[in-house]
Image (cartoon, rainbow, N blue to C red; front, side):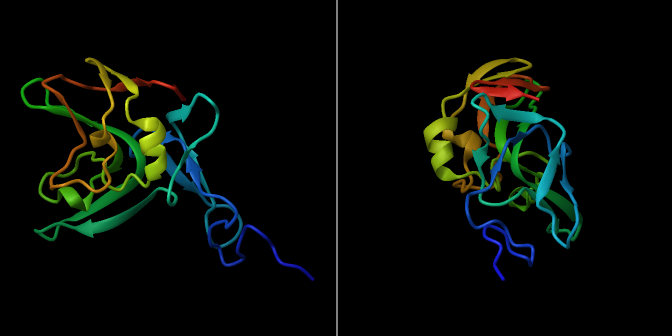
Length: 180
């Protein structure tokens, strides 16, 4: 008698709006929620950051993970999505912050690390509202630059935004976002 509008019966994504997602707290802080039917349509996110205004950031697709093999044929599991990450230089080499993937094949010889590659974020959201945010981390405070969100970096390996010789063990606050 009729057609479902906004959802395909074959499990494709909704057609009426763009997907939205919070910033995920770490690569292991989310999982697919499998309900009835052959496809998942929801995520369970254990920790992260959502915008103070209650809306989520736009993403091109749901976060996902996949297996890839490095130059030595070793298997890796990449976690792609808007994942809040950091790489600690322990005060002896640069530390980095990023919103993106963990163990991405882009950083083949330096993994597993976080990178802004494969963050799935909408470029308009990055430009309009994410660059310039104040991030509080265990060793201090920094304003985000485009490097923290760069999805198409100029070279590999790419770790995100260089925050200098500052040890970092956690990110506790992002301006205009609420931790959960």
